[in-house]
Length: 148
Image 1 (cartoon, rainbow, N blue to C red):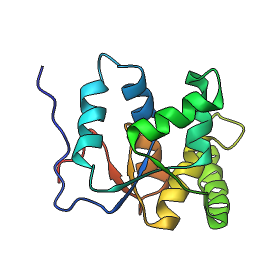
Image 2 (image 1 turned 135 degrees about the vertical axis):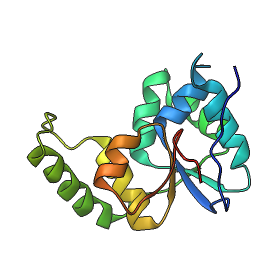
Image 3 (image 1 turned 120 degrees about the horizontal axis):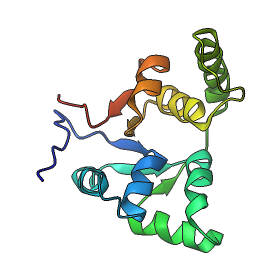
Image 4 (image 1 turned 90 degrees about the horizontal axis):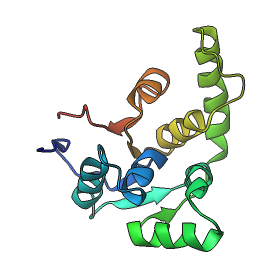
């Protein structure tokens, strides 16, 4: 099977790496490992970032904080705090989601992650396209659908 990596005109300088990408690589996912690992290799000159919400999701894989720290180091991720302005944007995006018929009753990490990427001008590497495209239209995304 041949994987199709995204085509990028310019390699972004700062990339927020979503938890699904980390899960793919850490779990050697049979469907997505090659794509996710390939993207991380392609972006090796970028500053690859994570935030507390992504780390909380990734911590589901670990027995202790040291395992998470080792994974972050192994993938070359740098930790970044969430900006306060992302909280307001996340709540407004979540409100739009609920008004559009969304069934979740508490703000999901994806709303904060999308807001973080958008307010900080980060590119987001993710496989979760729909939420981010819909509620964070100004966020730059690298997804399996990225063709330019």
